[in-house]
Length: 388
Image (cartoon, rainbow, N blue to C red):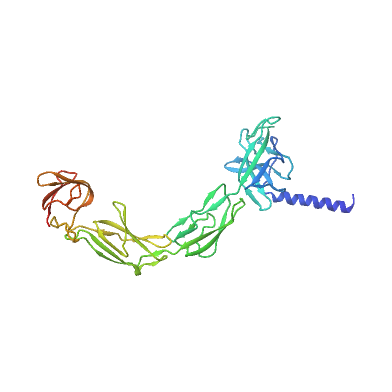
């Protein structure tokens, strides 16, 4: 053998060692094995792309909750036999009856597809399919791997969104996350602390030995709405006008993205009222939350509730003439009330809390006079006088 032949042989062996070392799995042969045939004619893909020469197909067993490689082949676009090694009592491996788990290593991207689905052939010398057996023989008919996906529930967050963790599709492990300064990011879990982050646009980059559909994702954080300097003008309900009024000084709202939308949510009934401009009129007694929504649909709720109350010393008299003063009587109790005339005739039934506007069930105004409102408890009565 000439020196030239020796150098060629050494170079070939060195190349083989490099290829073997690049595959990230190590296998310890045992005295028990199962053969899995993989023909070149079948479909072998990851994300729809056919496996290339130099890629690797591995089969894994479970060891205390960790997947361990029990055999692999380096794919050369030729039919091959993969040896899966079993537990022989000295060295660990597949247990009899254990289901095979396949993984694919992609040489071009140096990543592992952990989401691999396979189907098995049958007939001929094949004795088994997806379970390990000493001296067993299986044959694949298809192998399809898919890359894993990492995303967040949204690409845009309001600054009061709190903690936002990534969402995974497929098997994902050993990931590290990085981003530019200003985004408060847990580099181990990928969780973003949106509230503590600065508003702006960011790129979150993923690093993992697992094959991913993308290596980075865009995230934006909108500035939060600030209500610390909020100024409001509130007029409570009175005996004459049993409804409140609230006016918001919009110039005292800061942050967020203009324009703002204003709304009140009555907490007991969970009813929402939109403002007319910057004003809320005809607020019946109750407790309200003030909600500010900006152009990016970010919301902020004022820390102090708006409480509209009814004076307790009002004379129960209403004059339903449409002048906005004592046109109706507010009934705050929860339940059902019945309204009778002085002859004991039932005029109307109301689900309360509600207002009685001096009309009967048909919507007609009742005559002047005295009327009795009876609550769910028959002893709960109130006499109301209607005048013109």
